Amino acid sequence: MLLLLARTELNAGQQEQLRSWLAQVDWDGLILLAERHGLLPLLNEHLARCAPDLLPPYWQPFVARYVEATAVSGLELTAELVRVVAALAEQSITVVPYKGPVAAALLYGNLALRVFGDLDLLVRERESVAAGAVLERLGYHATFGSDLTQPRRHGAPGQYAFRHPERRHLVELHTEATLRYFPVRVDFDEFWSRLQPAPIGAARFETLAPEDLLLFLCVHGAKDFWERLAWIADVAQLVRRHPGLDWEAALARAERYGAGRIVRLGLALAQQLLEAPLPAAVAAHVRADAAAGSLVQQITRELFAETSSFEQLVRRFWFRVRLHGRLGGGLRYAARLLFQPTEVDWEAVRLPRPLYALYYLLRPARLVWRYGTGVMGRARVPDLGNFEPTPEEVVLRMLELAEVKPADVVFDLGCGDGRCVVLAARQFGARGVGVDVDPERVAEARARARREGVADRVRILQQDARSVSLREATVVLLTLTGTAHLKLREKLRRELPAGARIVARRNHLGGWAPAHAEEFVDHQGTVNVLYLWRL
Image (cartoon, rainbow, N blue to C red; front, side, top):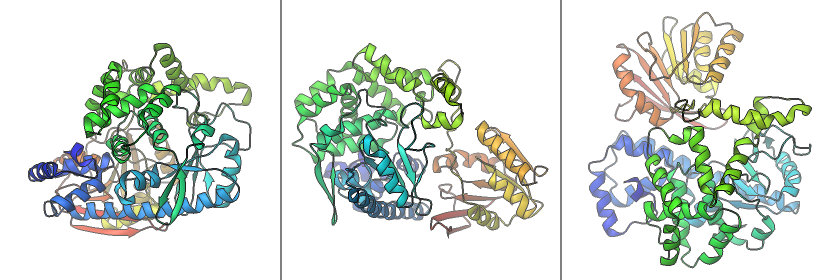
């Protein structure tokens, strides 16, 4: 069903099939899969056209808020793109936006139909220092842990990322040096010679030619193992929007950059899953690559799975090897990605300059620790959601909603740095139990409890939230993903005592009707939707 929804237009037969399926669908599963794969705005669009009355009432506020937030965020980021590009142009810096607002406008025809949360800009490496200075004058702060003006320790980071502390916008500068997932270093001068206009409303930008955008989209999707259907939809939309695309030039260019199989893989996924209308000759060329076909089968098996085999280092490495057309080239490509340090490696371990070469050994060691080897078992990667700090004022409001008292035991499932349970102990006198699977977060949370003087009332457990006992809990805080909340729902029903309260931020519990829901605007202007249940 999601494969049908991942396109902007449906013919009459497809609309009828959609209505038939919607009448019997598991709405919890569909909504959360659509959110996970970046397709909730498209789902809402098709519902409005084909079946406006079928969305259950308990999901209507969530979908409405999500779609509205996507549209508002898209408009804000587009306005910010205009501001940033204009400021860079004043300094004669050539900047090329792609993905984000440009992809939404050119591929989907609507900023609100594609989910994006940052601005991706291509700039030449030689202009990166000047571009960074412009962003700093606009109020942005570098997040990649190094000074652009200083000599690099070992290569460039994965991107030069800058965040605005007030607007919270993220701008990522990508250069020839940072695009490390291209098998061959890109030549921006070549791409610049083919730039095409990209109007968005009254704004005018220049962006990649469609043949070049195809290459960049496929490299980006392969970088992250094509784990989101929205990335495959981008390729399918590009094919649909550009029936006159110069396929000979596009495929030859991909081969020249060592990305022939990467592009064939992206096209095969778009055609087989989303019926992208490839010309017969191109489709035959794609089918002739047996290795790409095998990778399509692997990705298709993984796309909607609970856990991915790409969480294991050996599988990740072998996937990179197979992306290259030749074994030797694939091994060199995968080895470069395995050993070349990134900004994360630099920040995790600070070495004196004479020992910088050790970063090349520390990186694979860190990856083995994080992902395992494929022999050592599952990856050490949380699957209920990554750590995203909740502002303390939002935590305080969540505790107020739960009416926390000194006699309460407050559990925070996925506690991160421990701020929720520490605040419950410090402000309300309650006992707190934080649960997190990440040892780094656990250490951080325990240190926070000691620092705040509440270590005697706060316990931090390194454990999966699905296995911890909730028998003593009277209040549970949830700030995880929507999928995670649904995974925990039956556990909450089974283990929590009568009278317990559950407070969730952003994502509710599907068919459980909350006793109370509200929108809380924090000091940065972010709207936090909070839900309260009483058992």
